[in-house]
Amino acid sequence: MAENDGGASSTGAPSHIGLGRMAQDDQAARGFKVRALGEIAIRCRDMDAMERFYQDVIGLELLAQRDQGITFFKISEGYAGHTSVLALFEPGAGRADLHPQSLEPPETGARSSLHHLALSLGWEEQERAIAWYDHLGQPYRIQQFDWIGWRGVFTSDPDGNTVELVAAAPKGVV
Image 1 (cartoon, one colour):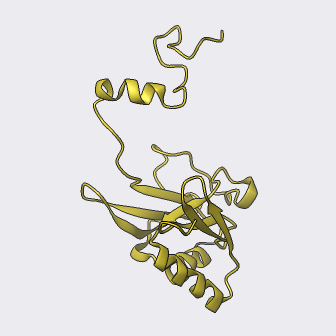
Image 2 (cartoon, rainbow, N blue to C red; image 1 turned 45 degrees about the vertical axis):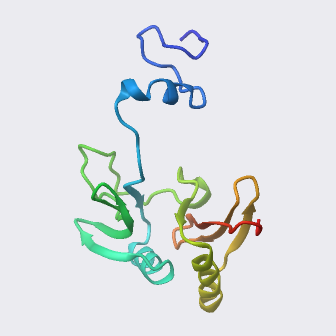
């Protein structure tokens, strides 16, 4: 395939987005704009431990447990009537006509395609989350993101996925 300058391919389809250029130029033609994350789905090696972690450590509300091998947790109210959820999948769960399937345990941790999961909360709640992690003995790391005014509190779930609790800093803190 020949290289091009970032425009359309020979079929007329865009070859790449070009750091937002197309997203901004073609939004009116596209007719929609994504407003929120509706769901994040994670294939799990240890469903029991993952369910306990996201319910007991992170504090997500359980919506449905092990419905056809999938457990759903509420993250937030979401957008336009669709609750934002975290879905935990047992190996082989889900619809094969929509997603690739495997009964093998998934790659997790550093070999996973999931870099990390970030959940938003307020600064004061983040302070309480740090105290909660200390109370539980849950290991964590803190990183300041001065360029955008955020602070992230990073931990790992039982499958080795990095989970961040991120908050915008009050003015003058970061």
